[in-house]
Length: 270
Image (cartoon, rainbow, N blue to C red):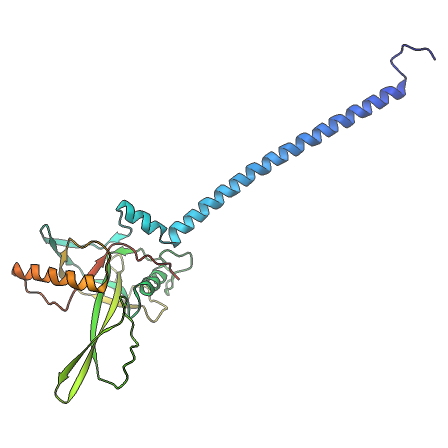
């Protein structure tokens, strides 16, 4: 065996094997890096899609949309149409046509809002709780009012009807040998959009939600009511508004008043 050569066939075979093994390892390492890069890219898209989904659900199902829209001064919902008869700086005389409203009485403000939201399918991913299973667009204003009724007196003093601002207001009226107890129950109404009749309106599953027909009516609306609304402030502002109307020559019924609310109740629908 002479020296100085390039080696025999064994050396060449060994070199080629190591070369193929090296390139194979480099290829595996490269493919592993590509796989990790693709997985990171996919993970970023999954996280982005999840964040967008969570934001949309939070916007639709929680008061987040209400708070942000109120902060921006935007009223969320379809406004009920009316004819403006007379307008001043402090009040308006409006003419509303006949319509149909969904109504809940005797519950708290939050519970009433939740039941009406469930009936209309508003701010929920669940099917609307009406027999037609159709989503009803929310309208504004949401109407709050007191419904007065009389009942014979009884010996029990337990209060079973709850109002949205606290307990029901009861007054005792003496009328000879018999007396009746006057009870006032707070109610909330959502006016259904469109010119639907009581027969065409979707029927609710919940028995606490009832459909009522509202006749054509003319109302005086105060334009200066801002801030938090509760039964005390509403009654005081209603009394001030009645005094203004009477000073200007209007004849008003102080027992008939309604609160028009253009902002949602800050409540989670159930």
